[in-house]
Image (cartoon, rainbow, N blue to C red; front, side, top):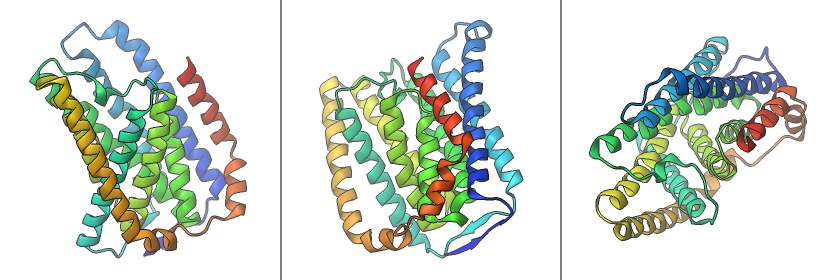
Length: 285
């Protein structure tokens, strides 16, 4: 793999910028949620439409700003198309396994993918608003920009920083934990393949699969939906286990080291602490 980097910024400064993007997302989401109550009329699929608008107005501006400021940062991998395909399959299996395990926990969450659909139109709109749009926009920001901005400091550091910020801007502890663990997998796919598109593909597969399983329960029967849920979960776990065994050496070679100096630099970031406090406040209130 080859990394082209802009060395004029330090790790702490870069984490501060990413944390500022996270704070912007939290603030924009809060403000828009308040305004939407008054400005948007009661229309069909109102909640889904709000989610779609929120995704675009909160993700695209910080992603564009980070990409513009760090326009010299590029990441090019030497993996082949077949290697990227295998990484996408492994990453999707890993994310769906995490999703399966988290949904087995007796903790309530506001995961929109678990919602029931009352019509085909609602399902199709959900595919766009809750499946496709978040996968593209979130990966452009967190794996495209965040990993791209921090990869020069180390693969492990870049994956953990991007996954942490990705997890913390979610709305509940359960979804935050799922997003963090999925973020680690998505970050690994991004680093190993050198492709943000590969991470987008993994995210798309995970989101669309979850929505389709929910649709089976809504349009066929609850019992059939449960069977589909367990079947997808068990199959994903089996595929993920095989992929880990086959790719262990590759993963270890890429993520085998973590610099204590970099850890100290990350923990010194005031922006990260402010973002963490803001995210925890948003979760609790």
